[in-house]
Length: 134
Image (cartoon, rainbow, N blue to C red; front, side, top):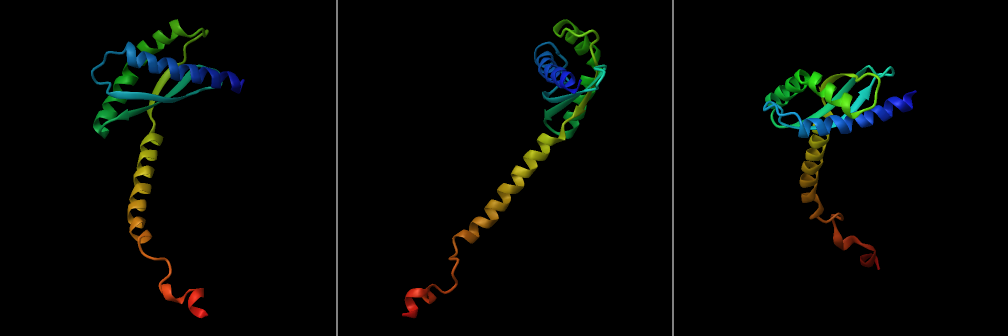
């Protein structure tokens, strides 16, 4: 049964993303990307994870707009997916994208800091090598 909910979650992710991009004309919805979906085992509830580009205020407004339009999106899903009942949708901010971007930024900062150490010789006394012992 887990396999079916995974398949439905994958289809929901694709279809909800398409509906948001093409059919939802709410000015409060900024640049939103559907990053994932979780469906309950009985397929009645779905949590849709969304990544929103922009400041936190715009992210909050976009989530409010998406949750407000959940009924419209659910009806549109009903005509696209062949399910007995369309799941009830809840939109949630996906922090993993923001977390990944922050990790990349930190790695780049560490690379910049350590690049100064690479230009220094690793051996403090270059004349003390094996050639000088002979």
